[in-house]
Amino acid sequence: MKYVATVEGKDFLVDIIDEKHVSVNGKTYEIDFVTVSGQPVYSLIADGMSHESYIARGDDGWQVLLRGRLYPVVVEDEREKRLRAAAGGGIAEGGEFNLKAPMPGLVVAVPVEDGQEIKKGQVLIILESMKMQNELKSPRDGKVSRIKVKAGESVEQKQALLSVV
Image: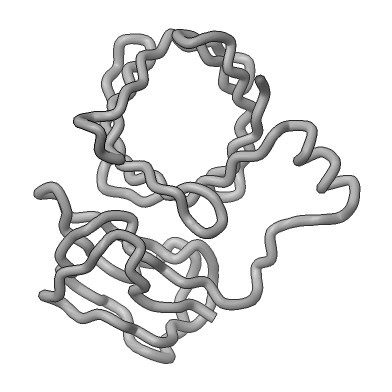
């Protein structure tokens, strides 16, 4: 089965060969991928290198927290993506983006203010979870609106934190 995974605007062609092998952009990896204690925390061993990540379904795809950085990931069937591209479809850079907590945690800092102009990749919230501080960054340029949390507050998974318009 072939998929296209889009991470930060870059497409990766993923071909699932079998349970233990996957090809990414033509390079084959031997993998072991399992959930940790039934939680949305996953252990991935790819070619002998171990990676631990938190993966949650978001509104527009997946949220992957890896090494303290949150990546929004869109996964599409290769054929569907080609058909949508041929029809002129794409992800809108406008409109409102609602940042939601990818996991339960404690808000350590909110380094932005309501109405502040921000750039893609700028830190919006610092969230502590599983004894790690995670920077939640903006997926695009815009303006911060409706900040719903402050430093010191506990948040639940998928809780709305703020919006970018």
